[in-house]
Image (cartoon, rainbow over all chains, first blue to last red; front, side):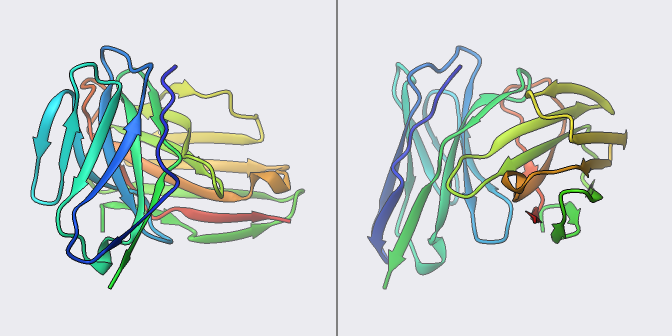
Length: 110
Length: 115
């Protein structure tokens, strides 16, 4: 069973790029990597998803090395509103194995 | 607004009470999920339903009883809970279970406190 590990917390300043890494040494062949953002009193919100290499959308980039044992969420030029908890999810709905990391609390300072 | 609603948003109950959590999705999805989120812990998958049929039960104690009458509604019936069951209970939905990369959409959660 894949276990995911993320840093517990990170601090950054407005305008900086933030990179959050998730380790998932036992990732299975069919597993995807998905990142979610969660604000207090809200459910997690989808940010980005990938299987391998690099994926980019309007809010973030996801870097996955060839061995897929880790992944890095990159948030360009963060703002105060990016202060939240970020979760790495490894697995797939087709297997029912949905393993969330413990979450990284990102604090963006002015 | 994600298209997934949950009621109530907050619930306080005694250990001998029976209560139910409700989830409704307005996205036309076929799969629905219950997760438990305790303080300082990762989200834990509890149950998965696809086309009203339960496909996953992650060794959840029987004091939690899910019900899925149709693809749009999901309930979690609670009885004889323990204080350690206090947590945020999240509902999610996805189009289905066929594709590994299927995206889940989460509701806002029900904050449960068991006294």
